Amino acid sequence: MRQHYLILILIMLGLSVAFVMLGSESLNKDLGRIQTLDSQIKTSQEKLNSARIMDQELSQFAMIIDNSLTKDKKFSFDEINEFKTGIGQMAHERQISITKLSDTSKWSLPNLIEITFNMELEATYRQIGQFISDMESQDNIIKIQTLDISPVQRSDEDILANAESRYRVLLEISVFKVKKEV
Image (cartoon, rainbow, N blue to C red; front, side):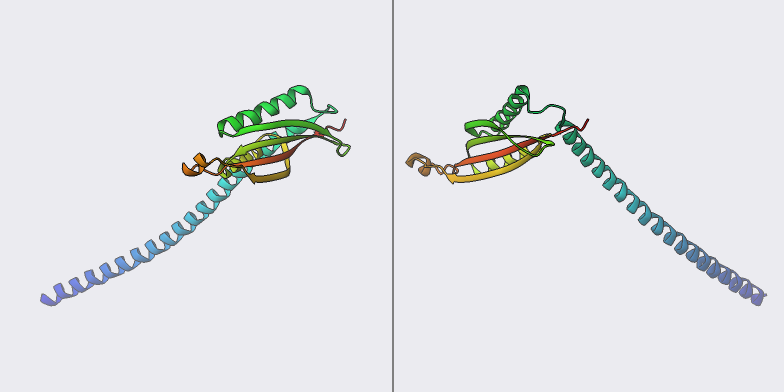
């Protein structure tokens, strides 16, 4: 009788080991499949995020192109004044003093309309960088032609007060529009 129980226990142990081995093998197979699917999902999400970013950048670029297409032969006074006002607002937000701001129409290629703005500003290096960054974020095609930075003479009070160094900035930028072909 004892042998029968011993054989029964051995058969149960064998079945238990076989069950655990089969379960482990099945679990490892499923985990491998899950990891493969997980990596595919991550790759797809990265592609989707890249596509969204590209879509945003391209839509911004499309907006710049739309703003830069015109049937006119030159910039209108309203456009020039609007751009100057925008420059003034950006400078005011950054606490930059504008000493001079003038515009000049330039001759350019047949399909381009160009206007040049000459500015003289007084600002710190940080303010200059922020201002140029703000200029580049405008919805126009802008090219910086000249950037000249020189230190401003400071009084003894400013030196003693450890004020940030200020610089005189001469900035020449060109704004372009593209003539639509009819």
